[in-house]
Length: 308
Image 1 (tube, rainbow, N blue to C red):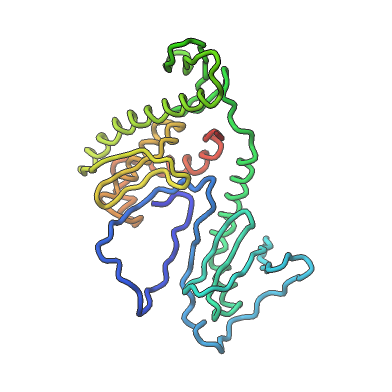
Image 2 (cartoon, rainbow, N blue to C red):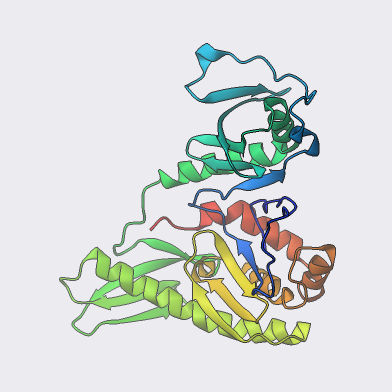
């Protein structure tokens, strides 16, 4: 299941491909923060098998302006620099990282066909490059300071940490004042405070997810086998064909409607293990405002999630 990144387009299996058999299927709702984007790929055009391909010549490159190994493509309103690597793979792959766009292609594919593939993927490429720059900027933001008076996003609102120096450790959320009261020994350090708060958040995640999952499972008329918390950096949640659901505990930073959307999304995969129109119709049947929640989660996640 995908939120922010494009699913690889797999090439047709070759004559020596191994059949998948009855391997367990899984769909995952992508978080797509912090981690390098996985490779997206596109099938190699059939005509590239012919060494006499008449593909159009690539645009002129300005060698003096590029680092070694880099190439350049000109679009109407953009200039795209990328690194080209040759390999034994069967498809043209695209990877977004700190170094920008890296394209990996079979040795026998012409440069013209590679750049045709880039142009076909240009919307995805420029979107992902923009998102990666945003993430890089976010990684440069100062980390959260674990101290009295610091604020933390919880269930869509900002709560304040209050430390009480006592020998008896404990933690309590005061809903009326939006304060998380943490009792720790006077000599406790920041790491102890962090561990206590994150442990509380994960317990809250188990509680909230455990309450919301049955509600949407009943609406959909499905039964899930189990659920567990996830700490994944690239997924909000996942669902297997066996009915095993995993939900990212960091969803507790968001308001309940966004949590419910992810839950509805995962449960809908028990009906449709894909992202077809039928799947989205299934999501809409139990969560009508899914498009708004989906957009909000995608657009606000980077600003809402604290940097630990």
